[in-house]
Amino acid sequence: MAMAECRIVSWNVNGIRACLKKGFKTWLQESQPDIICLQESRALPEQLSEEDQDFPGYQCTWHPAERKGYSGVMTLYKEEPQRIKIGLGKKEFDIEGRCLETEFADFTLFNVYVPNGGRDLSRVDYKCKFYDTLLKRAKKLMKEGRHVLITGDWNTCHQEIDLARPKANIKNTGFLPEERAWIDKFIKSGLVDSFRQQYPELGDAYTWWSQRGGARQKNVGWRLDYFLANEASQPYIQDNIIHAQTMGSDHCPIELVWKK
Image (cartoon, rainbow, N blue to C red):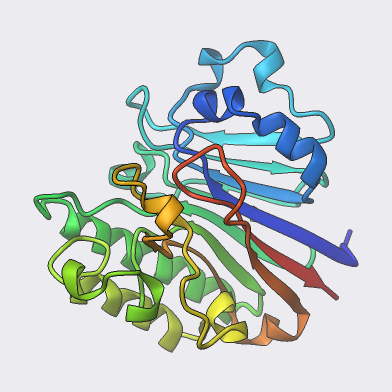
């Protein structure tokens, strides 16, 4: 069944168990999005009590990492998807719980937690391979005529406007030229950075802040969380919102409003 209006939220919760203790269920009850994509859940379902696993009004699909306390994505939805695909079909990524694909009547939604390249840059190549695998899957669906939405923690700032201190971070993962080039590849393939499309010159719009040095209070941040959507879907995207005042994680939620 197609949804006349659908509010989709994406949020890296930096540990679902910790976020639950910081009021996640209160936020969920008050916000009531139709679909919620969570990243860095860092838990197996059996590590949560039955009460903590119960999200009233929602069903939930988990894709945890094999390693406890690490990575993982969860997608919550009010309306059951027509199809669910867990992982990208490559063991090197799927053991880390980095992608959930849910197909609804109007669009296919990817919930992704892109790997961090590492302080020593040792995982940059792995990260780029993940981008490559994800892009191939998205291009296949777009070729089939599907509307494609990819959301989550991309762990990369695309342009200088997307972080507070670009010059200081040019050699750090998250703003390396080779990482940013992959965002270019997604865009050249027919996907659009939905927030930046709507707000091309809006600066100081960040979704992650270091937990050191009062970075969030000073708004010294990075925009790491994105919705990328195929060009043909743009007429149906009514709004893009960064909920910078919502606490509970070192990231904040982002929201896309779809109306058809």
